[in-house]
Length: 134
Length: 226
Image (cartoon, rainbow over all chains, first blue to last red; front, side):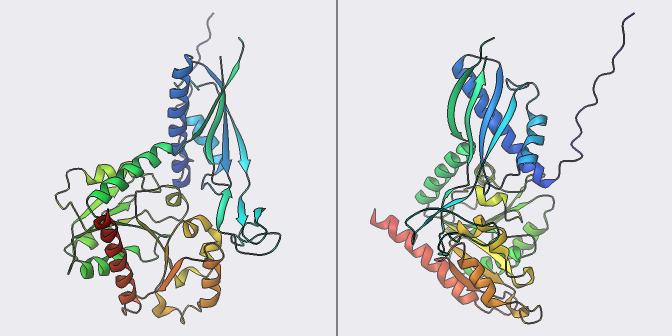
């Protein structure tokens, strides 16, 4: 006898607040780029996607993962895992003449010498680095 | 099946950056000074614009695009200034992007403008990431918000050229520590222009208008020289 399975409930977005919706539009942009790259590569199956995400990108990692799960259905990346590398904020310190880190919540201030260092060198990334395709 | 790695190295906001560049070229051709206003909800963006549109309309063609998640309240308020206003209802989106701005400009009979203000959605996180083709990004923080907004949202202040501290007429009543606020802002952007204003009393407003006039003159001068 065949078992009758009920279809999965459609995905609820009840947990998606305003912040998440920002990540949803980013997930859609990400999927656009992935789709274009997959077409260039002549593939319809993407196994994994590698993303670089700066701590100062304004994007919440967990919200993006949540949005990714919603958005990837029926795309070339429907089964793809999203691998996210967090990128710490680095600034150019004019006094040290080099890249230095900062402490969250204390401004763009060099951790080594205390100088204000407003040039952000890293930490704003929202970058599709690579993907694995079949 | 064998997997292979495809290197891409693509900024996800590239499309927005491309659209913003096109907008910037368009505004350069029409000599339009574009000002993007960023703040938390309730910092006084709409109140600032009510006053500013009224004042600048004396000498210039001014207009505003207003981003709001749900209501037309802000646009309705601004329309009373007599200046042309277009609403962008962003629904779930917490920021404006260059595509929304481009679409809002389509078929607008108020164009070309001398000065276009864009009132972003009240939020200091997401709007900081989206270039709208503006000449001038202005961030507002009210004395009622405390002194550390710049430390909490460094990118919004780091990417703005002007910071307006608003509602200074009630600074004393709310125990606002002016020195701490100025220090916080300068810790993320030492060269930012900081103006302290109170729309209700008019304090600091002439300085704000003078800066806008200077920016507009500079933009026109630059174009005239080309």
